Image: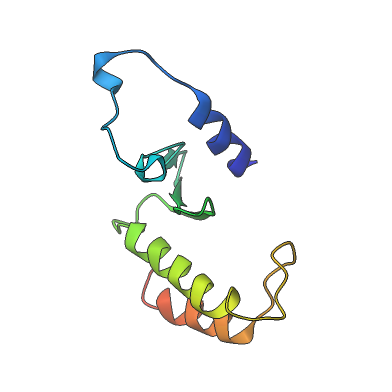
Length: 111
C-alpha cells in the first residue's frame, strides 16, 4: 500500500512557482513521491533509491532521529549482501542471516 501511495504521488504535478523542482541533468536525481507520512504517534519515512527501490521505515514519532542515513545504509547492505548473491531472485523474500545480523547491528542503538 505504501509503495502504491508513493508511486501515485509521483504523478501529482502542482503547477505553482512554490512547487517548482530543481532542474537536474539526470531525471533520477529529482525528488519524487512521498518522503514522510506523519500519523497519530508514528511516522513513516521512505527512501527512494536511484534504481527505483523504495525502502520504508515505520517508527514512533517521539524519536528525534533522522532515519535518512539509516535507510541509505540499509540500501547499501541490500546491495552488498543480497544483490551480490548469485542465488537470490529479485521477486523472492529476503532470507539471509548475514543481512539480518547487519540490520540488527545498525538499529541496535535506536530506542
